[in-house]
Length: 155
Image 1 (cartoon, rainbow, N blue to C red):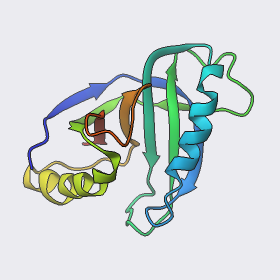
Image 2 (spheres, one colour; image 1 turned 135 degrees about the vertical axis):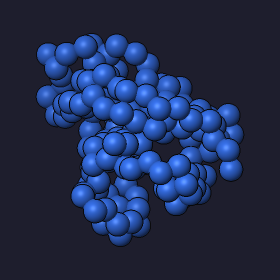
Image 3 (cartoon, rainbow, N blue to C red; image 1 turned 120 degrees about the vertical axis):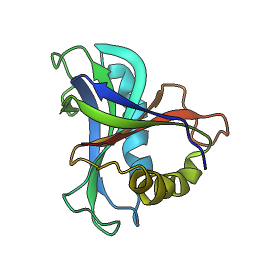
Image 4 (cartoon, rainbow, N blue to C red; image 1 turned 90 degrees about the horizontal axis):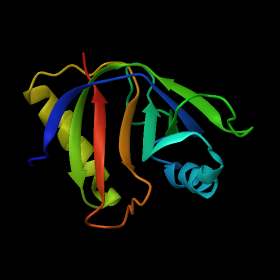
């Protein structure tokens, strides 16, 4: 499997949206994204059409554990955030970035390759910071031509 990748330092970002506690077994991703997509136009100070699907995993995470999943958009500041939206400050840091094109249903296979093959074979060390994917406002998870970037924090 050959997925284009690069290493990038990300600048701090201000993000707003919604979070949910979920697990890989009982995937609540569609719930949080449906809520976010219905209300994203209420965010007045968005600075791009990029959307962030962000995960906070517990330290020493195993696939059976729960984690927090966010559906977010980047904003210029945290002023005038609609009342029940959550704000999230993404710190700067070093990331391994993969460009993926295809349906979301292939995600488990892609992530399995990244974590079980690519990272160990290239001797990267995953850092304990948020993991996220970035895609456009017009993203269609069921399309073969859907494009997203997968950001994995590394030391």
